[in-house]
Length: 361
Ligand code: NDP
Image (cartoon, rainbow, N blue to C red; front, top):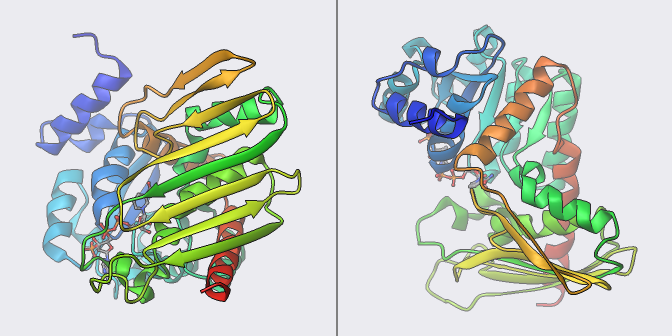
């Protein structure tokens, strides 16, 4: 078998997972940003930790968790010493841990601000999952805390670093699609009961903050403009107790300064394969799937000529790009993007979308 980067990473991932390759061997370059993983849930364990292992300039050196047994098991798997496992209460002690440069925050949305701010105060850089927080005020406080501590802050909008999305943006921005008239996007999934995602304090809202944010961010990112107006409706279709605290479905429209209109929706009541469709005067471009962990695909036509683009990077390479990028920004003292300010702008629009939906209910 030829050992390409892809199958080396896969071999390293699967072998390391069963303890055949120690992390030191799977990660061979010298300068690495060393991460504490905060919250050992699905995104951390299934996606970001394997990505850090496969990254050329990152390593996992500490874990922060409320589940000691899970933390010990993952520590053994990733070669993290017992002394570098922290509970949430002990989190501030990472200040004294010289083998931690940065934190990755994979906690429920309502905990992002607190742990980002505490990380900055402990002298660590922060890569925080989207949505960056649950309010505009929290988002501003996170940016201020990282600035005060002179630490870098990035928000986990992996699609902004993803090749198909970047290719689509280039087509739109270069005018190849002509004048953009409208953009449509949807994203959602059916959420089971008992999830923190249905708890307002932990989630901050419903599907808009969790998965609708992909559509909102894609519209802003692809068009390269901030909306000038927004209007929204929300609803609950399933009166089964899941949506007592958060909306089930929300749909919104945005008008951009160029005149382009966006029509978006998101739901916790149905499995929607995320898509983005952009209609210009010279053609149409569709991203579908638009937000998946692999296989993001573009199709469409310009002046009747078919256009296609497929990101063939295997999982977890989208996350590896994200880790590589944030780590290289730290190592080379560059400003990482998507920045805290980018996360804040989404939070400001989310706030306006909710206000509009409330006004029309
Ligand atoms: P999970 O529920 O799978 O994990 C969250 C983890 O947070 C838990 O496992 C737990 O870890 C910790 N935690 C601490 N306090 C609580 C609490 N009160 N209730 C529940 N969990 C708690 O969530 P996800 O991994 O799906 O999502 C985490 C974040 O990542 C969210 O902000 C989400 O929006 C974002 N996300 C981003 C994605 C992307 O593609 N960029 C994709 C999916 C999610 P422990 O047991 O170790 O304490």
